[in-house]
Length: 297
Image (cartoon, rainbow, N blue to C red; front, side, top):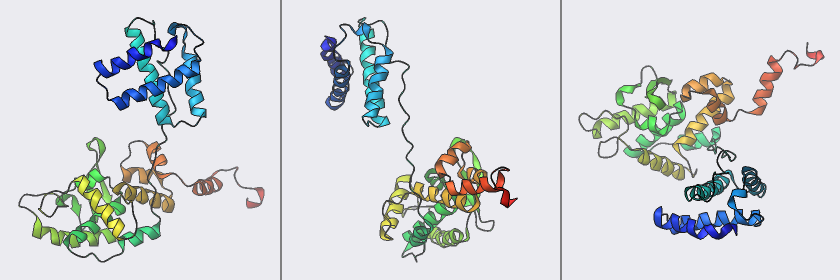
């Protein structure tokens, strides 16, 4: 019987690897499904080959299992065969070298322009809302990452030049323009900042104790502002995505958006901004020499 080693494997997971009961049960469920698929046609694990593992994974995919779940199932099978190999029950692992479909990259939804106006067009009440409005205006105005916003210092903002200097991934520095609405919000905040800042504090955005605002605090404040403005589930990353989408829709300049977002690979920008098909069609019709009909020549 093929499954006579299952109990020993599960005991190994529990006692030797000290995995939680929940995790051990997940292994058991995944492997039981695999055993059922094999229908116990084979008498030895040495008779199981990679094509049978692939067939099982493909069947599970056709049944609607998500890429993430398929990856987990394959990992369970691979771990089981690693155990059999260590115990010298089989000579090789047939699950090695088998890959699953990549997980779909889930991107945050972009706010449309009307929702952005609803979020940002308000008169802040109190010092914290003045700060919060400046943060949200800047996130949307310049497409900053959350970490980049939190890392800003007062000296990295130029009100006169309407620009900010940020340090992105890989410590790459880039200069970004700031829109007039964001500049006005920053002016208002900087006046308040002077009253609460601690001597020697360089951070642009401070908490009520005069210290640099943390990433988690920014997330919570942005979410709070969104709820207050009637737009739930707002995040800093959603504002970055909205910035990229709106700039791209208006300009069609993918390279410029890449530079502003700080992407090393333009492919990342293309996925991130989900190029609008109508825009692509328009560019194609205008640029390709064989796209136009004869009557347009």
